[in-house]
Image (cartoon, rainbow, N blue to C red):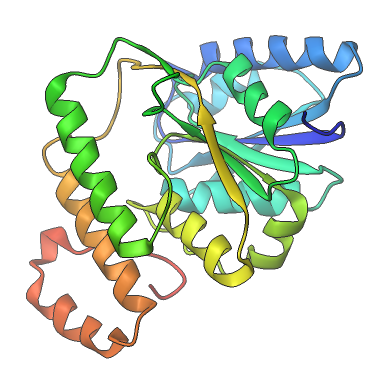
Amino acid sequence: MGEKGKVSLVIPAHNEEKRIGKTLSIYLKYFLDLKNKNENDFEIIVVLNNCSDNTLSIVEKFKYNELKILNFKQGGKGFAITEGFKESLKGNSTLIGFVDADAATPPNAFHGLIRHIGNADGIIANRWDKRSKIQPEHTFMRKITSAGYNTIIRSLFFFPFQDTQCGAKLFKRGILEKNIHKIASSQWNFDVALLFCLRRESKARIKSIPTMWSDIKGSKINLRSAPTRMFLSAIRLRIMHSPFKSFLRIYWKLIPEKWKIRQHNNL
């Protein structure tokens, strides 16, 4: 069972004017109901990163004490989530997590992370668990692509996880406090960098559970270039934390400029 206490939920948002309104509506309604039942206090921190549309004005229409807004010119999911974590650590939340702005993970599924974190340091949603409910079901080609990517990630980082990329993760306050300044805010593999950091630095106990997830229209990910960029980013991250770090300069010179993966924290 999950522990009672305040939960911080970080939502990174880059040009999400078409989806953020619905996401905030259903999440605020769900967690306000829990708060009224004295189950969990909460806050939602929306972190706008390099938005050029009306995302800010839409978020500002939600007048709730439980909602905070951070607005940055700098972009990147990893940067946004890390800044949201830092903001949440200023308060008294005992659990801190994040979810994507498209509501692909419904609020009751995120609540499942809260209820099942138990004695673990963190908990992540696993779309590839046979018990997960996915709508629509993944196509054969997507299953093959994801299986290949997950195999590579598990081999490089010695992960036991089937799904590192699902945008629903939750952590105990203590594990983030210890590592917040060590987390690399990678644009393409932030989830991998985060899990790798927590396990490497603190031997964090992280478990995964089945989830509910829907494929929401409007994704900004380029399905042609993203897999290659994510793969190169993962290779670079792994080299940075290996005895072969010096070879990174050679790797960097060989990669065409358009494929270079820019990451923060000197990665």
